[in-house]
Length: 370
View: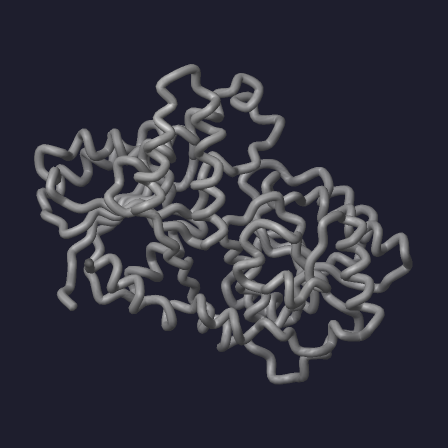
């Protein structure tokens, strides 16, 4: 396979987007030049980054075998600006998330004014403009394509629904790669049941789409039942502290043994290996990298019976690991604790290895090099 030179264009270079890019670059046989902007002001990035990044690419005076961009880029505008030099260069779009299916906070002013539809339209037009469209999970690919008919129906005429088939034909799943092997160095030597009481884990962003309110309801219900547990509340917060977490801190007190962003990867990995149960209440996960990481580290998942989680753990084979309501989730966690099964190894840990870069990079290189 020939080594290809690829321009990787990312308007939101932070968090999971940044990790994916850096790890892909480190593992791939191909050569990548990065064109990025800081990961802030995401709405402005979706509007304006195409202009700024097109100027950067043109200023480089390089030639590329492929232009690979993320869903945060207005690809149609970007390509219109670089066409004089790159009209014949293939393009690929990688969807980490999409705005058609993203659960916007009702407090967002753009929702009330229906301006949120414009960001979904950028995703749609970018998918149309790309030669290849990759999604990070089967769930994500199907959810995006299935949402397009209703989305286009919102417009008054010339709805262009025939374009959906064009996008469908060039869409594939390219599973999110994760550096799971990095966690192995921090695996404890003691047995799985080293905690005196079960440690519950939150290891997601502190934002609306991850549903901190639902997670807090679950913990308070367990507390009201007199069930003994501790909880580690990890993760980034981009805005204010969720009021539910602040209230939870007051009510649970010393039961909360970690609160906020881990100081280092070693600290984060240590908490994941120490955790016993991962109750997930998210409103949206297009892949669920933090969930896969926790499961890999031998933490028992309790998952909503929807979203991308069924791509990782079969809801038909393991119905006891899934729920549809917070009351049912509370029952699932309580049963796991009271039965003592939380002290046993998680049966899904080994299967998460399929998302490690060592298992995926050959497929990435083949597709990106085609």
